[in-house]
Length: 283
Image 1: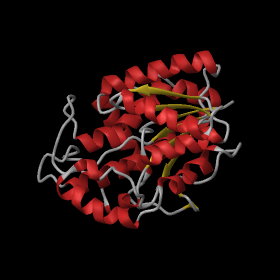
Image 2: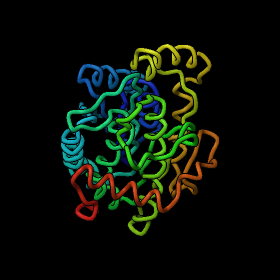
Image 3: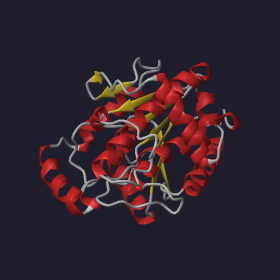
Image 4: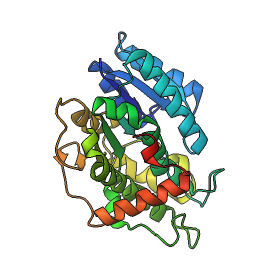
């Protein structure tokens, strides 16, 4: 049985993707910030698939230490249950914010959770991914096409705009997938970014303020999370790695012209410095 790790799996796209993959015979390791919500999500999945193999680990992925600690716990789990192999890592945890806020590590929160948490978790799980010839899937967004990386002010401390921060974080997700493919294809690791579409979830409502108000109106036109889950399943199920970098539920699609080898390599290097790590230590 192949194992898949998915973050942000207590509601919305993450929960429905975990449910779909568990129902299709994968062993699912899932995460969420709150232990009570993790238990409720696991119970919900098992109600749909009583024989499913699904385990939840609570962690606050806005904290760099928590992301690294979580990867260590998951590696121990994989060693016990899956011969140390990981078929796919779906970095789905995310947030939207109405106001400028930083983590305890001093990072802008949307950048920290929407992008850097996945960067760190992939680092920690890269040996298991390499062993399995696994896949890394980032939850991106069509909105990345209207963004550029603010290299001179990555945390957007000047004239903060929450939508700009969100778009930049999603562009970083696509750039990270590009960087992984450029660097580690020889190890058998393949990376993708997924546009789930406009989905009716609570992500924007949790932001409060203007973002919460706008999202309450927009999400009425969204598709159910279960529909978006199919996009992730399409990348996990085939035996051979699917082609392409950027996908939605219909297949491969075009991505921003900002997604270049140069920008991807630059972001990767900056991210290593921000986290105080080197991927060469793990891969």
